[in-house]
Length: 194
Image (cartoon, rainbow, N blue to C red; front, side, top):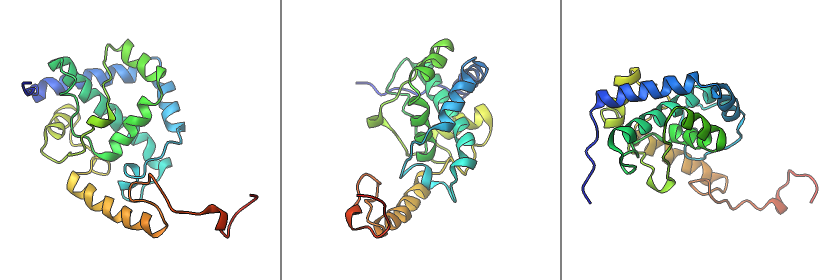
């Protein structure tokens, strides 16, 4: 199978800007934003990579960054018609918020459908190899200027932060990815009824 040639950065930027403008002007936009910001979804290896992360402070800007990532991916799909090409590298915190947006199901799909956007997502195809100067970074800069470094964390720094988190998680009995723990609640001194 031939490798997809990614489209011109300027074309992606223009298409993504139009997509984001359409999403933000959509009648359902505020409903989507409210639903996302009310979500209690937690990521152990996405949001916590943000320095001194606080959901109350960081959720709204991350929502905007997730929409930018969705718009960039939708633009690549429009320009290539190849759903393999859309899996642009996106940093883990932004991708975690993309998951929260897409978890809004029919609301997210209605906004996309109204704006003639295709939402393509497969967890097994996620690509977190984002770094300054990569194709995603260049497309983002062309569309909206420099992405906020607080959320658009390069892969090398993300790996370092992930190792810090893994050591902290291990110190309280959790696996490095937050997908398992060895906490025995029956022996926990703090507790309520059993």
